Image 1 (tube, rainbow, N blue to C red):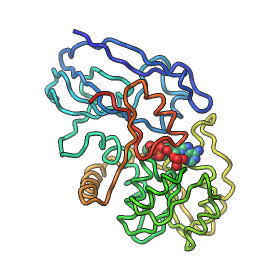
Image 2 (cartoon, protein in one colour; image 1 turned 45 degrees about the vertical axis):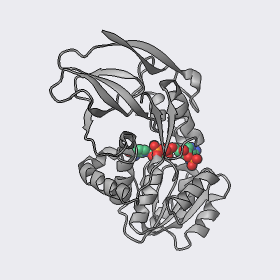
Image 3 (cartoon, protein in one colour; image 1 turned 180 degrees about the vertical axis):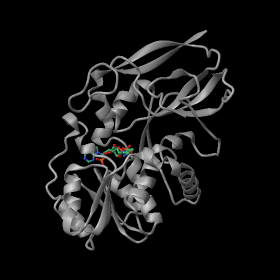
Image 4 (cartoon, rainbow, N blue to C red; image 1 turned 90 degrees about the horizontal axis):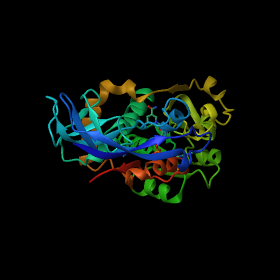
Length: 330
Ligand SMILES: NC(=O)c1ccc[n+]([C@@H]2O[C@H](COP(=O)([O-])OP(=O)(O)OC[C@H]3O[C@@H](n4cnc5c(N)ncnc54)[C@H](OP(=O)(O)O)[C@@H]3O)[C@@H](O)[C@H]2O)c1
């Protein structure tokens, strides 16, 4: 037997903000699971800013795009997977797929919503955890600045910093996002960077300076944070979303780098895969924090695979609060 599945293809490489017409939803037929195979139906897929630089080169044209997903095993002829189990994979942007099991990681049931494994309990959460605690070497009581703070990684990072009793300054692109950060996530100061001059607002928000700047944005955010950094401050560079729609991800000029010298500030990029050895400890901490009400999370969920291109495009206009997801099935 075969079943119809839909998948998202890239037709044309975007030169600026991706356009809906550069993607196509394509119907394919997926067979039953053969010997040693698993048939997976995706339930949720993740949409991530890092996909944008890949659209410029690595993502193949006219083929299903790669991305994180959570699915249910609907047929299994593989000894390690049973029907009804839930699995994580990088086979998003499609409704069904066949696997030999190598791309799948089983999710053990724990009463927490499955979608959280694409956000706060998944790569997103590990990025915030490792970036802040390892690369950022965060110490209790320090002053922390997080940009894109109402997004998936940012909203996790600000709460980890609050759990570590830090003074937290956050920036986001709307008053509604800033209200969420202040009222629900307990950040000390939230700056709407679209309405306030970031350099002045940061000076007022952190009069004693910044010890750790968790950079999700680059460009003007980095420019504004550098002069505010304290001696031996750390800047874990998580992402530079302000540059991703430019050719070669070239950022706006950052002209304040000389501030690194006399304050002996460390500016260091990282990738989440560096923290794989921490995954078990991260999951245990995160589940404790969620159950204790210290870690909240939000999701912006669009329904149906046809919404996947809009979800991706929406990341660049700030359409999401918390993790941007697409629901592919109930
Ligand atoms: N290093 C790693 O291993 C790793 C892993 C995961 C993610 N990341 C990076 O972490 C960052 C956040 O990712 P995420 O998945 O959590 O996405 P996200 O923050 O949930 O979504 C993107 C947000 O960025 C903000 N934004 C978009 N364009 C902007 C601009 N020009 N200037 C300032 N803000 C802008 C928007 O919020 P506003 O409304 O606030 O503008 C938008 O909602 C990204 O840079 C991503 O590449 C890195």
